[in-house]
Image 1: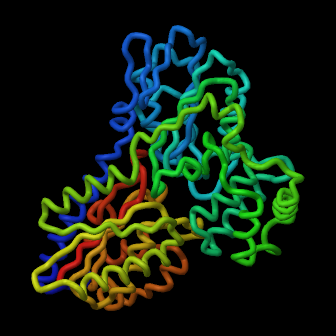
Image 2: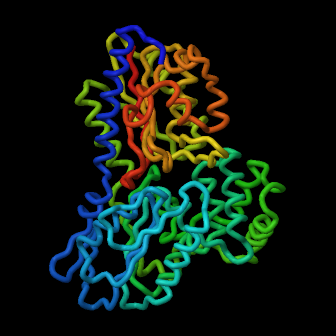
Image 3: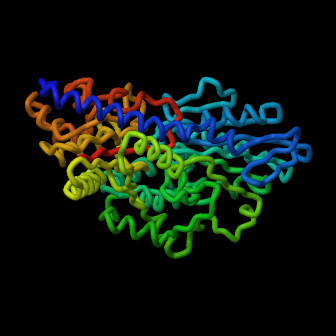
Length: 454
């Protein structure tokens, strides 16, 4: 990294320290083990969860299933409470996110694009559910990434069809909500269909939410919740992005049959399975933002939540956040400082060759928007996939420094190779120094923290 002035480097390091403390506060507030243990308690053979009580003496079987970045740690927490009565269990986690302390089987699969490992693991879960009855308690654990990890294409749709459809929607710029609206209609487990498969068992779903508003039909595409979206809405998303003649023929034929009522809709709230299903949010955006806000206030910042109901791709989100930060900066009086908090996951297409992930992509795109402008520093961190480091810290000097080194910023963004960009830029902006280490399975969401000064 080119030599900064001593003052600007000292300022950068100080801001980075504050940002890291704020991020760590958010992260700690939604640790999966602590979050589950706060909700799930046991007194002898009476299990309590969110006000509901389950008599373990009248149950003949307890089965644990789940998926997501935190599923392994959540399963370990459930084991600590129910270990002696668990009959069987399996959870699906992203590559590199296994929990060392978990005895329940963990299968690794791809977090970005559904793969064969996720398909096989999901089919194993469905096989387990075929053996349940009215005396079974199914504990389902969901966290960020579960939508990609639970894979069960409906008849007439192949895994390759889903992979292609997912990639096309991501590259077209579909939001997480839009992506899920389409994909849940191609899945045998999403949109409440996993609840159907678990019937007549009693189902207790514990979710670490990465969805703003904690909508159960959106968390992991709602495998244990009624599916509110329709085939017609899925068709509108496809039309919006001009994908009618780009998606696989089998997918479009399936969606069109659905719009005509020739394919079964996602499960709806009046179905019997939901009478025996309870969904509990054990932690999520509210807790993370509350903890982050408190830490920012301790550091002398006024706090403002920069929330959007639904996030688009990382570069689009970066532009929105940069405009917000610039407006705030222009409104501040001399000596004022403010902290903007933003959380949630931007959809990200899988890189064709590069490495980096959505947080570093967002950070670099944000840096491009504020190039040369003082008084704004951003940390974007969370889970960027199975790379060595995730997240980055950027400010108005990031792009000028990169240009001084001959780095072509747009080329790195186009190739989604932001890991290489920050490595070449220097360690001050990359990795743990910027906010987060490699995948450890305890992330519930991605967090952006922006410090703004007059």
